[in-house]
Length: 247
Image (cartoon, rainbow, N blue to C red; front, side, top):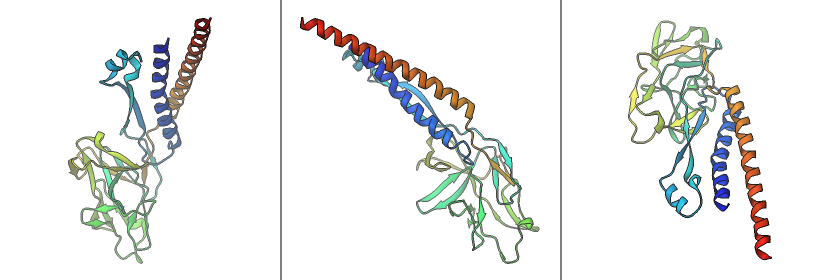
């Protein structure tokens, strides 16, 4: 009976982790460039020891979170400073904490003509921050960004966006909801790949599937309730057994 209590409790812990992930995904369903988190359940190496102690085979179950980097849909905005990456890759931005990587191309110009993120972080080119020359004479309609990331005013190219990729996306970690940190040992691949293009006037939407997340949340809620009832039932049975033992 005690083993059953341990099993029910252990199976509820991964459910709680998944529920937190689903809630965060749904909260960011409208966040540009957001990549949803997923959870998979694994058996720990010490699960055999847990069984030997009478805690049940589920004591060694653990939920591990990972990032789903699949592409979101592209939404046309018409804003020349809205950029989306079609294919693999990340924009590079400079933050007070160091270099970060993002798929959120909702950029703008600051008062100095520097292309920045919504939080004011400079967007990087190969030679530094992207800055519009002759800002007083520049017009948004004259600024073009090619599929290769070349930033042009009229017919003159004055910068090229720094776009990078990684051998192992699983080594990237979230800093903020749309910013990522690369592992110090991860190899950075410079430049957009052959199948990657920059789309000016578009934004990449979140890759969260609302209906899928809601269905998963409902199923988790039902399973969690079932385990709660199982624990309550086993607890009541144990209480009655203790009462009988006292007679």
